Length: 281
Length: 281
Image 1 (cartoon, one colour):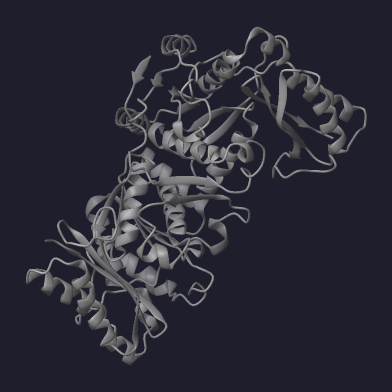
Image 2: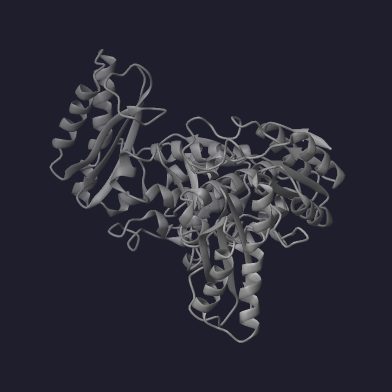
């Protein structure tokens, strides 16, 4: 596995691979990789000749009071995981090589990013769209793999690919969970043992909504109340948002008449976790 | 020469050309082509195996009170000019095929676009950046040619290419002028005979600034005053802006100590014309 650390080296390599007719798959990550990332690398592996994993903790998608400086990092472990999963190139650029000091061009999505995490984290999806467009230009992928856990991000990136005519196929990988249901996340490393136990409330809340739906409940307010009740039962948890939105437009819905997305962000202690599930009537 | 009218057909053709190792040059235009455009096509012709001219009057770069609906069009003449200049593909998409009805992803440049035309035409450069990024993704160019007449646009697009890591070489073509000095523009077609005569005031104003500079004047205010005096001498002309800015940052300057850009937008009758010149101390 090749390790590249500058945008220039990455782009030169990618253009050479493209010119040679190789099919490129990319898995953009912020590192501190877990089984969720590994599953995405395997999806890329099955769809491309050359698999590139990018590892970049993107400052542009963190707010001023967020966890950029303490975001967990372990390059050696990440390197080993990428190699074990059969990645061909690990692109791990230095923090200062990705954005020029006077960078002034940004990509905004202005509909799907209004609510949910976009409302809680102003500028977050601008940072995500911009860095992903840059990574696409640097890695020249035919296919790009993202996790369904970041449901809003996935929908926004699909929209970006459509609206900017980027010739890349976006593939989504299902959320990978711990045995007790907690969605895998690099941020789970922040949790104390007691917080870790209570963090299952996110998945249990989604299960509660799914059960009520299966029992015939169609009111989004009732489903949200069921979710909120589960979160309230975990003393270390505090909801940032609990929403049920249309799966396509991400606009709030009142009745579940077509596929909806139950999405939530919950602080467990100081750690903000997200999870989601598609609800099908 | 091939004529393509859908984004899908254009992108398929471009990806096929790329895969075959052909070097692609693109000249984005809004049509109603003149000798200025022809010179850009020739620059592309000299630098690429395959020359694509795009013809699209981009609604996203027009303000609500601007001239989108009356922008001059003559497809047959444009087609003949492209063919005569040796273009290989003319990409002329229909108005509705370029933007989805629910398009929500936009590219913003937030420094270089603050002043000059960006101040007079809010949203203009967002529309320009977005459509050019789309056209790049649809035509997959190695080299793209733009005119120096649109000086601010050129600098903003170079910045976009840098900040989004787009692997395209931007080449600038010098402004082409009528024999009396008027910069060629599709919008010159709007001018009445009397307006056409007075429209030379833009170039004469730039010449006045250049003469004062050559005579030792370094004060931007004095140079602007010289330009304004020439414009004031044309009764049908009214300045939208007359500015002298740093050639790189586009920030206003007070003394010409390094290359500066003298840039102006002037209404001649109802027609808004722009022109510019680089002032070198």
